[in-house]
Amino acid sequence: MNYEEKFSNVTVLGAAGKMGSGILLLIAMEMANQKLKPENKDRKYVVNAMDVSDEGLAGLMDYVKAQVTKVAEKQTVALRKSYAERQDLIENSEIINQYVFDVLSVIRPTTSLSAAYDSNLIFEAIKEDPELKVKIFTQVEQNNSNNPWYFTNTSSIPINELDTNAGLGGRILGLHFYNPPAVQKLVEVIKAKTTLNELDEFAELLIKNLRKKKVPSNDFAGFIGNGHFMRDALYAISEVDRLAADMPFVEAVYIMNKVSQEYLVRPMGIFQLVDYVGVDVCQYIMSVMNPYLDDEDLHSPLLDNLISQGILGGQYASGAQKDGILKYEKGRPVAIYDPDKKDYVAIEQYRDKCDEKLGAVPGKMIPWKAVIASPSKNDMLEGLFSEYNSLDTLGVQLAKAYGKRSKDIGLKLVSDNVAFSEDDVNTVMLTGFFHAYGPINNYFN
Image 1: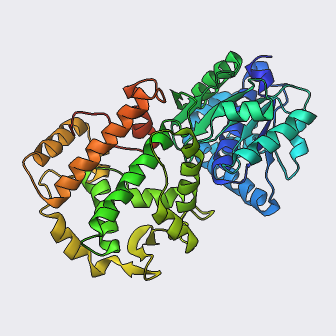
Image 2: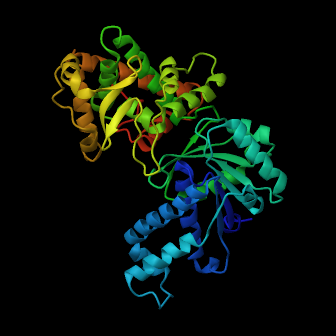
Image 3: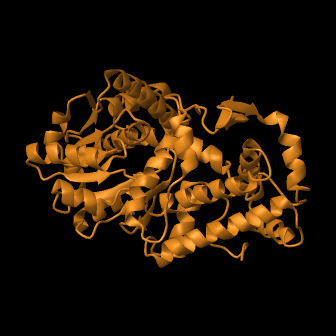
């Protein structure tokens, strides 16, 4: 069965969720694009958008329509060529509307898992729960006679474990899209030892057609992305614990969040990133990874305490940030949660005092957005981090120690055979996390 045939009947599990909706959008557009090819014009394509919520599925269709419209508006010239034989499509608006119709027409929203029983491909983006994934895979296996292939969006669960426990016979591959899938270019690809080569070959072509960037990872819990992120977050938490011995907790969080963002030139501070992913999600990912580790303990009592008090973070369906460790107004942090007071404390109350503790701002410090867009990015970073060697402020000390720890984490991922190379670690952090530079560098030695 070739690419087009395999792609003719697909199911996305968890299609109304944050990751599933983006994956569904990509698959539906790829189907529409395939159908525009003359050799495929008579081929039928179906993608079942399966989720447990009717309300979520209704919102999903609105999301897909809005996103496809935006894509079509940007690609009108190319679409005009694709619809060249359609003499009834004259105006750009007609071409845009036709493409939107073609994408939406392949989608079949459903709350029934039975829709997957006829599919050749199953894209799974449900809750990061190994038992639930295995349960669903097993049910599909027992009712689908097509020997379907499974592409799981897990960000932490070993693929071999899912394959073995669900009895999939190697017909499973980890395709870890990054959030949001429609925008993010990175896809981590994880093969189990048992994964059939055909799945990897298919994924290679799919990723190319989706204009994404593939980075392979060995099948070890957490893979590259979360393998680095979870340890990076735990380091920041340990520094907060250390600093909080001499200052209030909220000040320590403010300082480490600022250091990890502004001093290390990242798109957001580490505690903002934890909020973005979800405090509870981060703690759960650590709990999934932990049983596979012999030499470290990925666990945070602080996150346990925050979760017990209902501090979860995450995002609304609109994509807006929910309050977590930090409180947000119009997307900006305005307060930090104090677990002892069980309330948020406004940043304006201690910002100036903390900034004074951090010391004079390095003269060559430039915001991440300016650095990332500059053709002289490398020179700017070299200048900034060279300046750090001549400064001894608290901010610089914390930044240098943080950068060194981040590098050590990356190097350990390679030495532990989680990542195939240092370049793969750097590519994941550059592409998937939008860092301005990879963690394995010569800036922090």
